[in-house]
Amino acid sequence: RFQDILGRSTDENSDLNAVLEDILKEKNNSIIRSFVQGPVLIRKGINAEGVIIEGINGDKLVKPLNNLIISGTGNLSDHTIIIGKSLADKYGLIIGDPLVVFDLTSISDISGIKRLKQFTIGGIFHSGLSEYDNNMVYTSIFSAQYLLGMEENISGKVVYLSQNDISSFPLLINEKLRYPYYATSWKEKHHTLFKWLEVQKLPIIIIFGMISLVAVVNIISALTMIVLDKTKAIGILQAIGFRKKQINLIFLTKGIIIGIIGSMTGLSIALILGYIQMKYHILSISEDIYFMDYLPLAFNVKNTIFIVVAGIISSIIASYWPAKIAANIKPANAVRYE
Image (cartoon, rainbow, N blue to C red; front, side, top):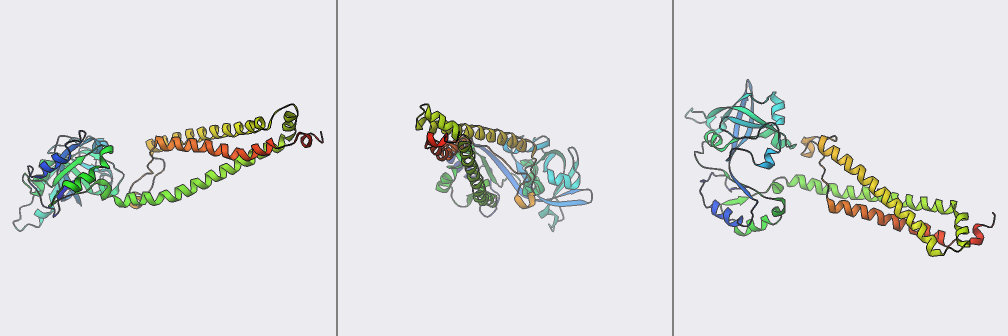
């Protein structure tokens, strides 16, 4: 998001366009939209609420925003407005309801001329972030320009990039963007959320590390019990000619089988539960505290493969000691009392 550092409006055809074209010349999947943003007052009956209105050029919200629509459409027009689910629930608003919007600066204007406009609710979005669901409304850029008294000026530009371009984009910005413009990314704006996620990583690693350690100990205990229970059979196998390596391989194979079955079972359960959570949001949290209203999940193929492989390798390592005990059993001692 690019705008003036002092919050001033700028001309649609300012030198910011040239800067963005230079920065984005190799970004084929980028989308640039002009936006107008400012504080307004919405009124429904006797209820009023201060919100931030954002007008975006184009006839429809861009895909990342449009995907958040849960009712109505993401179409932008001069007579429709898109509001958040929390705001809609707060005042009992539904699609098709009228909503009057006032410009806050014109209310206190000594001229007494107030800028206001009546909209029809055309869409309701749900982002899960209370900051947006409670405080943001969207409409066409022309309606926002009228309400905020900007004529044909804009607040700035919004650039939508692919996930692969986001990591390298800040470097290009710092090299080429000049005063009075500055840029903020959604990651920078919500740095508190990402800091919170980073803080959660260490406890998760510790907890799952302890669970893995318990699993390894259980495998060692189970195989050791099998060795003790099958001492006679091991002695007989050695007596008929089985070498130590062959005995060792039997228990290592059993450890590998345990690792594969356990890892694949755990993976299957995790995928099923993860899919249910992503689709139905079973685990909900307070969005006022945690910045979102449900526990988000995402599957990483590399991490998933690493965990499965690590589980199998851990099982092999855990089975080594019981296998060594089995291989060192002496046939005479194993069948002495039989």
